Amino acid sequence: MLSLQTLARATLLCLALVAPSARALDFSIAITPDDALYPVFDLSQGRPAARAETTIVGAGTGLVQIERVAARDGERVALAIRSPWLAQAASLDATLPRAGERYRLRPALEWNTAALARLAAPQAIALDVEFAVDGTTERRSQPARLHPLGEALYYVRAGNAEVDLGWIFAAYADPSSRIVDAILDAARERHPDLAFDARGRSRADTLALAFAIWEVLERHGLRYADEDPGVARGPTAWSQRVRLHEDVWRERRANCLDGSLLIAAALERIGVGSALILVPGHALLAFHGESGDDAPLFVETTLLGKRSLPPRPRASFADRLAGFDPRAMDSFDAALAAGRARYARESAGFRRRNPDYQWIDLPTARAYGIIPLAAGAAASAGAAPGAARRTSR
Image (tube, rainbow, N blue to C red; front, side, top):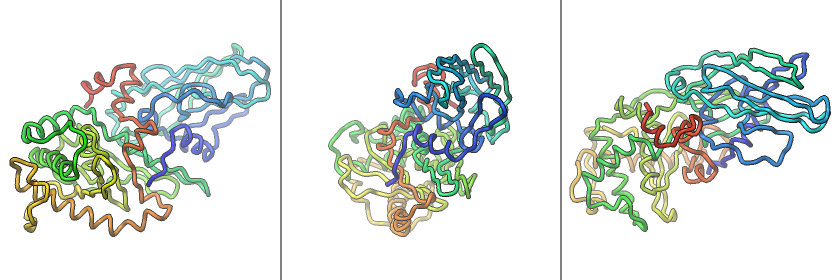
């Protein structure tokens, strides 16, 4: 299973891979990783807990960091970072207690999520950095590459140092999305006999609920998009495009990862634990019963909308349903069989340290503080999560 790290630890490791942008002056600027800004890192996290390390100052995650060696005890510093991509200036005022100590200033970045939603490809930008020491102010323009919300950086390597950021995919599964609302409303309407909100479900009960979600996607016309979502494939960075749920629903198309994330979000909403399984060039969904003791079930989402499938025996959970769409049942049953077979072929890869093999357990990711993007956007905008959901694309 993927070993998750908090953003604070992962960012600290990334900082070790990146040389700050230094000048013959009294402070330096570091943007991680490698002068690239991925807002999803901020928006997938709550604010960091209070730090024991007194040389790190500020409530930010460290994507943008100012370093300063204090020239005297009690040195006063003030920092402001401005950009059209920020909803407001990222500001920080602090006193640096000890002369000769190196301090890292990490302001909280309040992202302009409306502008980010329109960003479709990486863009060169410049941050306006204003830094003052005991009343003396200097301004610098710091270049950076801003990446879209829909690009997930999941692995960084430099020399012998490696940072596994695969947990970031959990941020794209949003159980509070209005699209998940629509899916579950439709599933409840078609299957009023199913206990969507019950606990203590059997394996067959869980399978029936997962099918009900799949059936809604089939009837909506969602189809597999045979495309390559990879953006960066090493040797120092790996990233992938991810469609947000609203885009999947509107376009009626999803690649293997998009479909897995949407189903995972709906399962999470009704209390079913799931995981994203990444293998070279592909993604699967895994889920299990409420106890977690049963062997996981694997779903090959590329079979969404698949027709002309060979006949299969009646599914064991079908007796939980008063009625169902037979074509959706055929594709769901085939997806379970194909998912099981694909995982069996790929399982040996998870024993190697390879960024192309990831097991991202959503309940574990949430326990580590990885939140859905919409919740992070609401926090960044100072709104309630429900408000963000009502204005999401």
